[in-house]
Length: 194
Image (cartoon, rainbow, N blue to C red; front, side):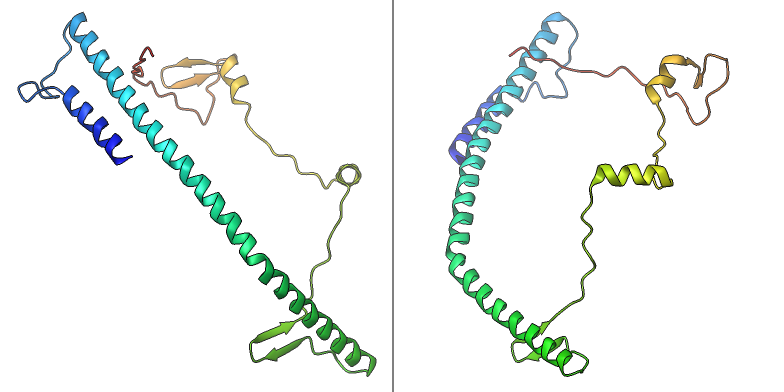
């Protein structure tokens, strides 16, 4: 991979203007020099694509290697995860039995037990709300519990308005507040034929 990248870098350096013609000296002043500049742009784009292709192949190979390692990781841990879950289940069952016994004896249940290797506890959870969105929406609309998000229809405003200097004017001749029109230079693009 490194050899391929070095070869591409060498090709790029060979294509660069020589010392008597540095990049800052090269000027486009007619159709011929414009064509030469465009040829160089196309060449550099091609070389960038070659570098991307080499890198993408290596990245893909590494992704496959990472995926293989992650599969191995999960498979290697599986036995220990199953054993861990077995003991967690036993601890939970013990904890729930202790709480039940305390409640049966009329005592306030102790929901935390400190052990040498950590703490086990029962933590109160918020209730889970299982919702039917259609029924809930119907109810919410009837009771006024629906939010409506206001948003500007910018495309509709632009269709019905005209630019006058740095202002946007609507069809009635009114200046639209909150809009300043800023003229921008034409954007330069270079298209390369592949």
